[in-house]
Length: 250
Image 1 (cartoon, rainbow, N blue to C red):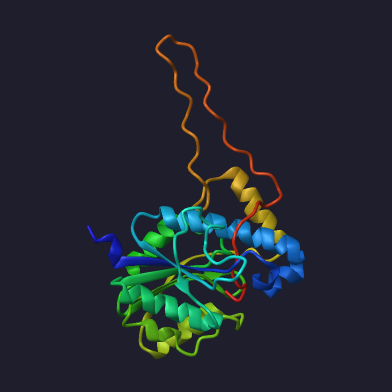
Image 2: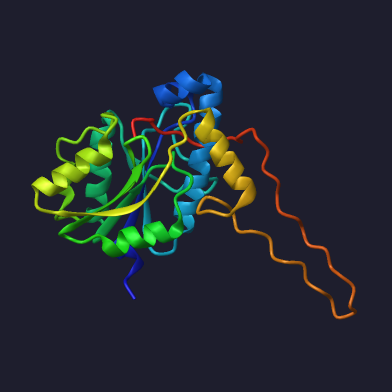
């Protein structure tokens, strides 16, 4: 079995304030609501990445006077890669570089705006990524939900703009020019408008995903034959709870 430190999961994080929330989300939902939606997505994405047992977790974050650490995301303060003054594109490349510097052989970056990602997709991305193959998960708007790289094929990100609106296509095209293969992961959606927000909320209420907490265990029956009633599943209402942020240039 491969060592956990052979693999890395990368998550870009921004402080839960309007000025650090993506312009597109604010335009659609308004500044205050956009912060809450983005924060909710970030919290769930972080919980899932943290619980993934087959990789180390690398967080890219720019601290601010109001939020100098990540205790707003995790009371235990997981620590982070300082991203001060970097553009989003530079942050992505720096996070991958750090992952390989720490000893990881493969690294997968997750887009927190894509809540339908499944754990098996991360497994697939890590298993199919190698020095000649890039793992790439596309979204319905032309962006990406996951990118899997090794240090040898990190050059596929050179000159890539993550705000182009066609990030996945650009990465796939660059991979072809470098004579690399691009392994396609299942596609999914990005939460960017009311329709995709409702799709996410509905999915939370009907089926488990990578971003849901484990369901409660089934009620047990005591030895005396009487039924023991466990806690029911927590109900998710339509209003997203507090969560974390990141530029919507993904």
